[in-house]
Structures are given as structure tokens and as C-alpha cells.
View 1 (cartoon, protein in one colour):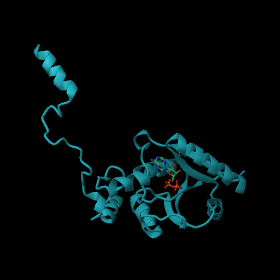
View 2 (tube, rainbow, N blue to C red):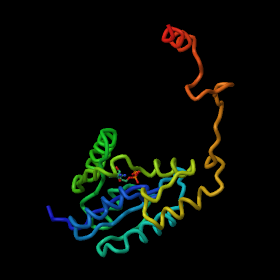
View 3 (cartoon, rainbow, N blue to C red):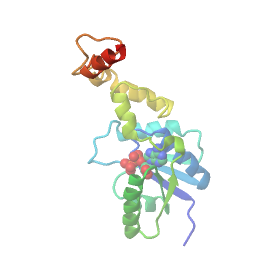
View 4 (cartoon, helix red, strand yellow):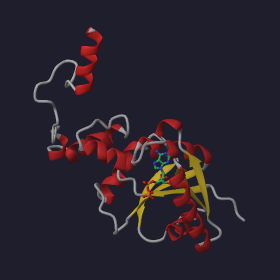
Length: 198
Ligand code: ADP
């Protein structure tokens, strides 16, 4: 089998996070070329368009000379073949990733046995991080600067600017009518205070 120096890193990247960037950086040290391939998935309703995601990743990886960014439609193995790549790069965070990723790797292997999937374990500090976490935090008005590259954080904030859920509202408050610094007086606490006086 001919050795491959090209790895494809496929994904949705909606948006790219520091966890993705960590995999791209480490992959770029292992392979001659890494092509980050943004999947056009018609069954998903993304926050950012395909073009926006490609632009975000290009801006975030411009300091990595052997990294390219493209978008593609259809089967990942077919796309990899069209780029003469024999490696699919994927990241693993938790056990649930492993099950899904292993199934995908096996499926891809049945479609093209020449293509191998290489997994990189997440760096500890990003093991909790996903694009969905970023969107969830931003939707409720939280900071995401520590989760995504700077250029992406700006665009995420822009998306959720004036989002109704970003305003804190305390719903169904069950605060006591007559609050005291010690909290509401219960029959037990009343009894105890009487007891302690005796
Ligand atoms: P997909 O929709 O194909 O899962 P994602 O953009 O969510 O695309 O993820 C692309 C790849 O990056 C997947 O292999 C995923 O497990 C990996 N990945 C995502 N977040 C992290 C992270 N924080 N650390 C390591 N790998 C990650």
C-alpha cells in the first residue's frame, strides 16, 4: 500500500471550536497536508452557512502552512479519494464519541478498504467542548471567547445578539413571602430553637 501524506479532517464545524483547532494543529504535525473538509449535510439546520464555516476555519488556521480548507458533498471516502488522501482524521472525546466514530470508521472501511481512520484523543482541556456546547452557551448570553477562536466568537455573538433567551429571567420563583437571613422558619427549626432555650 502506498503511503499517504494527506489527511482529511471531515466534520460539520458549526462552528469550529478550540477542540477542533487542537486536532488540526496536532494533525498538521503528523501529516504533510491536512485538508479540513466541511461537510454539506442537507439534513442538518446549521447556524452558519457552509461558506461562513469555510471562511471561519481559513481565518483560524492561516498560521498553519500545510492546512487547507474545503467543503464537500456526498460520501467522505469518495471525497478523500478525489484528493488522493488515504487517511481520515477524527477526534475522540468521550465514550459516546467512540461508539459513533467506530461505527463510522467501519462503514467507511467497507466502502473503501484503502482508507484508514486515524483518531486523535482530545486534549484534556477540550474534552467537554463541542459546537453544540458553544451554541447553547451563546444562546443564553454566556461568554464563548475561551471556547472558540477570536474571529468565530465575534460572529457567534453577532448571531445571538438580541436573542430573547440571552436575557436573564427568574421564572416561577418560590421565594418565601417573609424571608429572613436564616431562611424560612420550619416547624423543626422552631422546635429546635425552643429546645435550645431550655
Ligand atoms: P460531526 O458532525 O462530523 O461529528 P463535528 O464538527 O462535530 O462534526 O466534529 C468533527 C470531528 O471533531 C469529530 O471527530 C469530533 O469527534 C471531533 N471533535 C469535536 N470536538 C472535539 C474536541 N473538543 N476535542 C477533540 N475532538 C473533537
